Image (cartoon, rainbow, N blue to C red; front, top):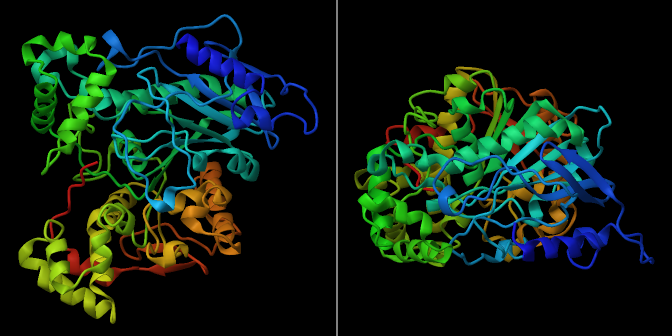
Length: 539
């Protein structure tokens, strides 16, 4: 940790910066925040109170990954002797900046980045009280290339209050820092380089296993859950033997990840990066000396070139990831772990429409052009005609978002649920509540579920709007997620009876203004698309 970061954390501990520290002070006094200290295996940390919940932020779970540690598996965090302030989020992994859509305006975004980013955050109702609470470990979205676990929508206070659970969020290596595969170019020294971002997650789960009991959590009852890229990380972890016994339940929200890159594919992507930084395959040792800004600048350049982009994501390297996560079947290593899998009704209004406003004003010709690449050209007319029958009166834009949502997200979720049902229990859902923001143009977009699952609608007005409906839906979804974390079954009095998914019945919980269970939900759409090869999603 840099001295500047230590100074910032010390100020936050005194209530001079940072919302959480100041919020812990008794109103109308100048008293310092309560002293909430706990001992981890690496040293003592001091947190703050937020609504009666003990909050610890920025705890290192592994060592700095810069310099000679770059592109290498994570190393254990060094111990510290003094009490360490854990009152402010740690840095996120360096990454390319992204424009924020209007619906995300109320969600804070980290600004500090560093390769010393292997940190996690804990929210707990109690310390050393022998309660053995369920532990919910959140993996953030942004594909495998962006984001952090420190957005305010991920704050775990309300979830911990509602369910008497321990919530953990974390940061890890992304993009080339976490998934630059050099195994074919550099040999055994770099054999695991294409998956070190996933090994960071393993290290975080080991930290949870070793330390969470001191925070009032049960290391024998850990649920991993994530949305979008976080869901892809959950999907991938389920195929990794290194995590056996480190988690016991899994939730995949809008990001079923079925296949990893092959070593040949990942090597081609790595060569694109090496060319951008002018490093030859015979001089990989130079990579450790590149300044972080140089790495990010090169990544920015290659991602701005028109056309197909290089993909830095998990690699089926035969070591860290011995097989494709969910093809041709479910991974045996996690066969006994129950799952929830799902999506939102119109994922691609955000995934595609946020960056291409023209998709909201398509004509028939524009619909056909837009579907090229998502549907084989020979099948577009048939698929469009079939969806028109299923959606009478739908505009070309409505049809575009319906078809691409199925192709981009829902078909993968269906396959994952089918493969999981062959092994053990899985529950399938779809979020169909339409947000009223921006005149209702977004429908039920990608990321809409975040506010409801974390019970953080008050922090998400730009996404969900105001009024009573968002909170009513949060009451249902957060309760179901908590019930699943506690028992391995999402059923609760807050929702209708939710049967496990089977290939025969295909029960789906449809969350909305009036949530309901439907058998073979969207079966006609599924049949229309069944003959098409699955889209291999690049994250």
